[in-house]
Image (cartoon, rainbow, N blue to C red; front, side):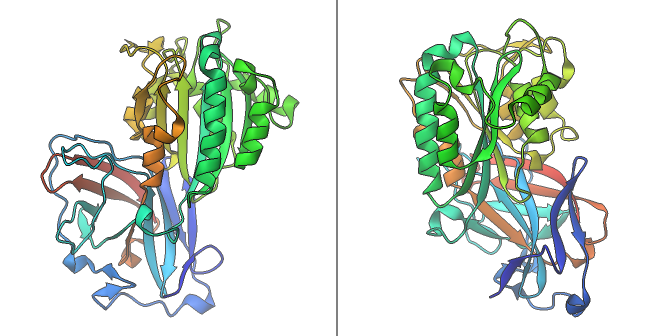
Length: 388
C-alpha cells in the first residue's frame, strides 16, 4: 500500500484560513485519472455503506480534545485524516484512557458524520503500533514566572527537561517551546529540540529567572512581547502567553498543538476581553486546529468566575478538551511523566475515512465526531468546520 501526504501533487495538504480547517484540491496531469470509489473497502477503510449514524449524546461525561485534520492520498484515493490526543474513560472499568474502535468493529465506540452523512472510519490507536504510527506534536510550555512560583520553579524546570527527553524517545515526533509570563510576557523560546529546551532553561540561573529571557533575537522578541502586555501589577495572564505562541511561533502545519500551562494563580485579564479565558470558548476565535491546553495548577483549587478580572485558568482546558491537574505548591507530589497530559499524548488516535470526492468543492462542511463507550458511561461530542 502506498501512502503519502499530498503536498506537491494530488490534493494539497492542510492549511488554515480564519476559523475553518481548509483543505484544497489541485490535480496535475499525472492525477487526472483519479476515479470515484467503487469498492467496499479502500486501503482497509470501511465504505460509507457500512457506517451507522452517530449515537445521540444528551450529556457529555468526558472531553474530546481539539484535533488536527489533513488530507492524504492512499492507493490513489483522497483520504481525510483526523489526529487527536487521548480521551479519558469516565467509566469504572479501570482503564484511564480509551481505546477507540471504528466502523465494523463489534465494540465500535467512535463515529463520524460529515454534513449529517455517516462515514466509514478506521482508527489507529498509536500506543499499539510499535512506533509505526508516528504523530507529530508541537508542545508549548506556558510558565507563570511571577514571584509566587519561585518555590516550584526549579523542580518544574527539572521535570520539563526530563519529560521532553522522555517524549523524544517515546515514538512521538515532538518539538518544544516556552513562554514565560506574569502581567507581561517576560521570556520564551520558539520550537526547539529537547536538548535546546534544556539549554534554554539552564541558561539564566535558577528559580523563576529560568523563563525570564528570550532564547534568540532578544530585541525582536521583547518588542513583540509588548503587544501582549496585560498590566503593570505582575498579575498572571496565561491567555496572553498562549496567544503569543499561537500567533507567532513556528508550528508545523500537520502537527498536533499541545499547550501545558503551569500556574498557581487565577488568570487576570485586567478587563481586556481578548485575554479572558472565554476567548477559548469561541470556536471562531480558537478553532479546533489551534490546539488543546492542559493545566497544571500548583495551589488550592478555588473557582474564580469574576470574568475579565479574575478567572479559573483551567477553564481553558475545559473549552479545548485538555486535562487539568492540581498539585502541591512545591510540586513535590507530581512529575510530568505522571500527569494526565502525558497519557493524553501517549494514547493518541488517528482516524481515517474516504469517499470524499464530492466534498472537494471549496465549501464549509460540518464534521461531527461522537464517542460512546459500550456501557454508556463515557460520552462526548465535538463538531467542527472543514473546508475541503
